[in-house]
Image (cartoon, rainbow, N blue to C red; front, side, top):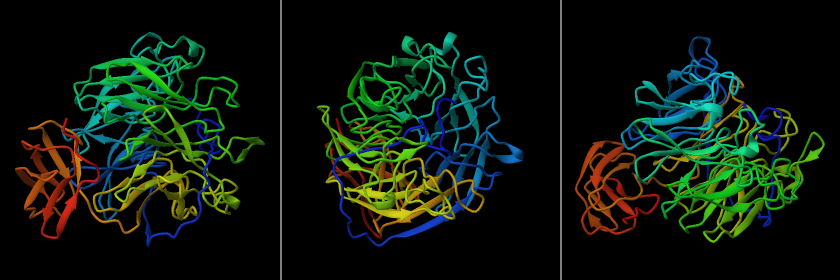
Length: 505
C-alpha cells in the first residue's frame, strides 16, 4: 500500500486546517447507538461507510477479517435493527482489503473496489494491484477488472476510492497509483494515479493519468455535478513553496470524456491532503474536508501537520475555509477529518473527525467525533467516541430514508475491531430517487421507509404512474410535463419529499 499510517498518524502521514472559527450552538435532541462490534469472523476495521439499498437494508465492507480465519476483508449486509450477515470474504485472487464502500447500480447490483489483490501480482504490486467487482444483493461476487493489466500499470493500480454511476450508466472511479504520468515513474507502483470509466459489462477506459503537476494520489470518490462534469480531489501533488513534501493536494473538475481542469491547489494555510471526496450542496457549491493543514497546530512526531479544515469551493474556483479544527481547547471539536461530508435534509452538513479530545482509551490523538456544520460555518460536536462505542471514524455518514444517520468506526468497540453506529438528531423520514435526474419517460426507483399503501407520486407537482414494489421501494417513470423539483410520495402516514431536487434536463 502507499502511505497509510492510520494506526499511528493520519493516512498520508499528515493531517489538518481553516479560517472561520465557529461558536457553540444548542444541540438538537439526539440519540447515539453502537449497533455492531466487529469480532474478526464477521470483519475487522471498516474504513468504508454504508449504503442503503432498494430493499431497505444496509451494505458495507470491512478492510480486513472474514470467515474461516480470513483476513483480507468482507462485504456485509445489515438490518435497521443491527442484525449483520456476512456476504463475502475476499481471498486475494478476487481482491483484498476493500477500502471504500459500495454503490448500488440501476441494475440492482452493487459495485465496488479493492485496493489490493486480483490476478496481477507482480513487482509493482506483490499482492495484486486491486480490482473492480460486482456483487448481487445475495452476495454472489464477480471480478470485473484486475488493475495493472497493462505494462507498468498504465491502466492504474491501487483503487482506494469507491465508484459513482454516471448519468450515462457507466461507473467512474480513481486509482491512487499507476497511469502514464512520467513525474511519478520512480514511485512503486509507478504513476501518479488515474481516473477511469468502466461499463457494467467490464470494459475499462483510462480517462486521465495524473502527472503530479495536476495532482497525485486521488483518494476520494468522485461526484457528478449538476453540469454533468465529475469533481474530485487529489490528496497530494503540485509542490510550489508549500510545507507539504509531495504537495498539499488539489480540487479538480473532469468532463466525461476525460478533460481535466485543476480548480484549486492547496498550500497548507487553506488546508492540506484532501483525502475524501466532495458533496455538491443545494446551493450548487461543493463542500469538502482536508485531513491536514489549516490555522491550528496538531503535532505528530514533533511536526505540525495542522488539524484539518472544512471548505467550500464555487464553480468559479473560489475556495473559502469554513472551519479550522482544533479551534477549542483540547481539540474537543475534533481534528483530522478523513471523511466526506453529507448534506442532510435540514440543510446542514454532517461529518466525522478521525481524532479529537485526548482520553485514556485512545491516547493523545483521541477517538474521534461526529459533527454538523452550517453553510454559515457554525460547527457543533454531536458525539465524541470513547473507544467502547468506537474509535477513528473514517468515512462519510449515511442519512437513511428514516432520517437517522449511520456510520462506521475503524477501531474500538467490544473487540477493538471497529463498529457500526447510528445517530438520530430527530430529522424526519424522506424519500430518495435513483437516479436523481432524468428525461421524460426515464425509469426511476424511489427509496423510502414504510411506502406500502402509497397513493400518489409527483414530480414537482406533476402526477406519475407508479408501482409499490416493497415497503422500501417504488418504481415509476418521469411523467410528461415534469420539471425540475422535489419528488413527493403520499403515504397513509403523511407526505414524504425527496432529499434533493430531481433534475429534468
